[in-house]
Length: 237
Image (tube, rainbow, N blue to C red; front, top):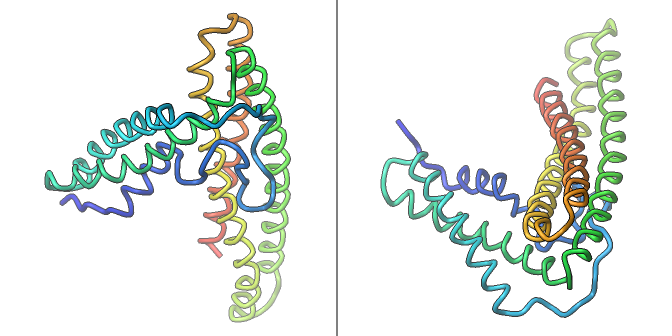
């Protein structure tokens, strides 16, 4: 029997549309730890109301259709598809607003390419550093857990010591999950910028742009693995 879950649908839409972690394409924080995801920004005029509306409408329609499909698949009634469309529209509108703000910063495809490539490079470097820190923390937690389990102590004392480690692991897992949402949001907008301006750049430049986005995706996948490891570790303590 299918069970429609409004909260589950919302989470699914946020993950697919990558819109719930941030508002706007700049100053995306990784897990709230003070590492901003963002690069050099141009400073032209604010996006026009018509342009913002255009992108937000496109996002609403695209997200709404996706939400309707998910809602129908997860529920049992047509009303579930309607609810799904509404949730999808909200998430899609957020993406559209972010894309509009970032798109209007650039006066030409060349400016967009240079700024976006530099932004991707900086974000990849920051995320790589963050991933290295998480990897070290995971190794520390594993060592601490193994030390406790190897001690000749009572089960009660072992549980007590493990319980002291668990909050640190679960907190780190929560930060990693939030960081993952932030990176996914940044990637979603970065790809839309590439799609919009890439066709007006030289083939070699467009390929370079793709490579830089791919590098950020690679670090995102590393972060995803770390987040899953921390989540499993916390559940097993």
